[in-house]
Amino acid sequence: PRSAPGPHQADVCWLTELTPDLALFSVPCSELTFQQPYDQAHLLAAIPPPEVLNPTASLPTLIWDSLLAPQAQPISWASLLPQEIPKAGELTSLSDEDSGKGSQPPSPPSPAPSSFSSTSASSLEAEGYAAFPGLGQLPKQLTGLSVAKDPQSRKAFNCKYCNKEYVSLGALKMHIRSHTLPCVCSTCGKAFSRPWLLQGHVRTHTGEKPFSCPHCSRAFADRSNLRAHLQTHSDVKKYQCKTCSRTFSRMSLLHKHQESGCSGGPR
DNA sequence: CTGGGGACGGGGCCC
DNA sequence: TGGGCCCCGTCCCCA
Picture 1 (cartoon, rainbow, N blue to C red):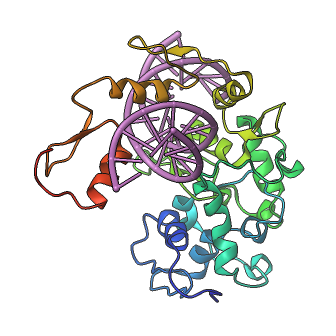
Picture 2 (picture 1 turned 180 degrees about the vertical axis):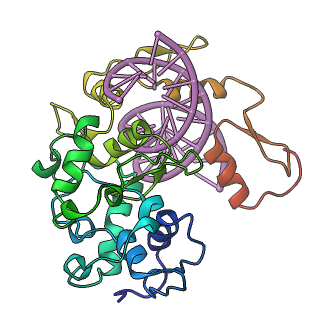
Picture 3 (picture 1 turned 30 degrees about the horizontal axis):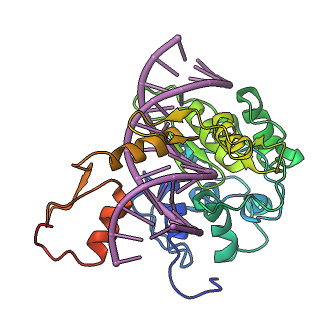
């Protein structure tokens, strides 16, 4: 059941990315329309456990491997069924977290829940299914963590928060940091996914600006901002309007220019 | 409205 | 495999 009208992109992404190899899987998920040969085992393998769908619940580190879903055998699934289909808002809340670009710190800035106290490689497998009651009784190949021996089959790692797919565990773990935000500023408590992001943030407290412009006296705390600033010293900017040939120092400025309606003539 | 600065995020590469 | 770093990019805010 969808509590709010209208499609939500995260809903669609959740399902389409989850089952890239299953073309018959129909979206949007609110309709939960399945076509043969999609069977119940496939469906269950594609639905995250309730604790994943509930944003208020603890979030154990868990990898969902959709590619292994078709291997599911007809076993007793009744005990694994969620009590109810999650609402659209519940489904999307975690994806929204991933896409959040707000400058406000997470509220409250909190460390990862205790149930996934570590995201280290060695802990991923153990934590994942210890925290998912019922799956511990499943065959190994159903846990989604055993690497397929068949070289023809592509191994993929899916983020359990947003279900993005990665070809390597390392890439997935890096991505997961954007959800768990393990690097916390000791000054203000704001959390970041990577240490160097925290370093950059700390400079906003210290005022340190190690990146100096060679053309003027300005200095910047962020290298990207220096790079953008350097564009202001250039007569020909990096981003050019294809209509009027006017150049801009930033992509965003070009977009603004185009959205405001380019007159078409050179300026 | 436009240009620019500040802060921040993600993927990829290298060691 | 993990950490550091780079590059590219976005969003917000302000002059």
